[in-house]
Length: 404
Image 1 (cartoon, rainbow, N blue to C red):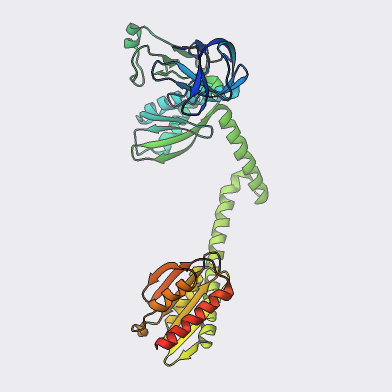
Image 2 (cartoon, rainbow, N blue to C red):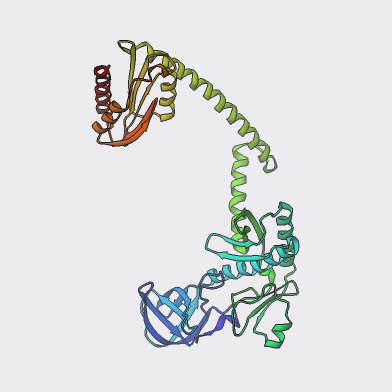
């Protein structure tokens, strides 16, 4: 098995080991090596693997080999057996240390404040979250847990990681019972939290800098709390502060007045939308009247035929409903484009008039399509320009006139 140097020193950035095995990694089709000792952390316990260099190669993945527990280093190029110097990607390692240590603190804080046990931990390059075994978590409880966590961070509490002897382990009050067999590594954050964990951690909580809860989301099995620590939290604050400054300038108000300014803007937007909707309805009424005036009579039936190059289907439906609210009206509408649409409709008093055959024929003439309905039939076909679509609708009108 590989001696894992990060167990004793999470701050070890550079080390020398001996490459014992060299072979291709079947999963990623890249070369992989096993060393006698390594400071590279393999993906496990919710914490992603380290990256860095090993000799002349870049370490792109690190995993534990199930057969014997050896640490498998996946490389971007092959290296030979023998001595090799490894160097950890320190910014990535430090980020993981800050997030993972912050997670221990926040998990214990939620246990104290809300009696909420952590049942999951997720760490990615963009997000960090814990899953809590409670579905109802009040805002006050979230804020309370965040406050407790940051108090522990501010106290610069020492963090200790070690492998206790079985007798000592049995006497420790761990937050969660270990799920692995064999030697158990314990991470203690002063007297505040004690957990079984094989991850990399800071030496004192002050290095975490800040624990910032971003949001909480209810899940089937509980609540997911997303948060950030350390440099991630500071960068997030910087982005949000810049956004607040930009918005304050745009709205000519102070940051404290942003909420009120946005509220006023929202109300003004809603009123504008209401007025626009009224205007659009009037426009459709006028357009419907104009189209009806130009309808082609076929006995007792008036056929309104129109096509547009680009128009929202909801507006076309609105016109159809207005027109067919009058007796004896049939509408043959179409919208040209990459996915042309047709809409045929009839008045209630024309129940004996079957629009199905001319509707399906129109779709076939446009290269085939799907759709249906009863009093109003809507369908989509392939690409069609305005000239072709008008021809299809004209033929549909002839079909209807002939059927009548």
